[in-house]
Image (cartoon, rainbow, N blue to C red; front, side, top):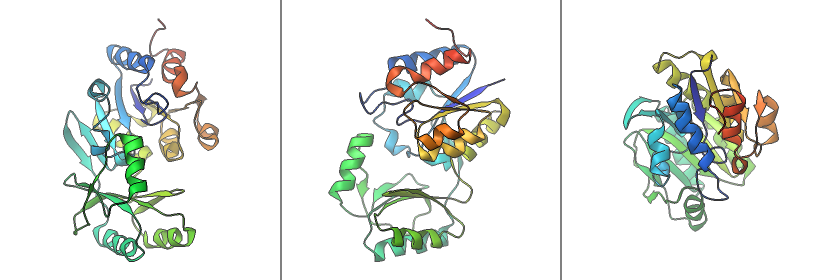
Length: 260
């Protein structure tokens, strides 16, 4: 029996067509809570990158699984975090600086910074998150996440080779580096375990390439209608897209809430 349900943000529970949480999704969240389910966000965003989301959307969640599971919050309290292997992270940062690549880093102290002013990347952050990180060079902080940008596949391959312990995710132009074994799938299982909930009692919703581990780790993995084909291929169920009440319709389909 499903007891906890996890939701990706962008393209799953937040529409970039309307820049809003669909009203039907908010209704589903309220009904799920009323019916006794634990609900949580599971996102690659950092906490700072969630600052412009609607407050009622964030507040209704029982937990926030941030940075793809590197950090988990329950009621404004950090209950779990997984820093990068520090020495290796320093080597990666040095390589990025050497090749003049733009990157965003997040520290265990909640610094959320870009290494340099880059108009293209700043515009991306403004478009996606409604905010822009502070511009500040890295200064040996303990890190939770590195997000770097390059079209150069050879450089990306070299960076991947440096990740002997830390976990590298390739997302075309944007690429992520996380602590060993940290991904969204690990994050939802760890959060559920904190609540005393087993993996076979978890459902998860996603739409993107980096949701794959989450969808596969959940007992019931649900892909949005607007999801990538590769995610739909591993999902247990495909619902409608984010702009056509997909989240709400799936919750009704599985009997977690009643239609209204």
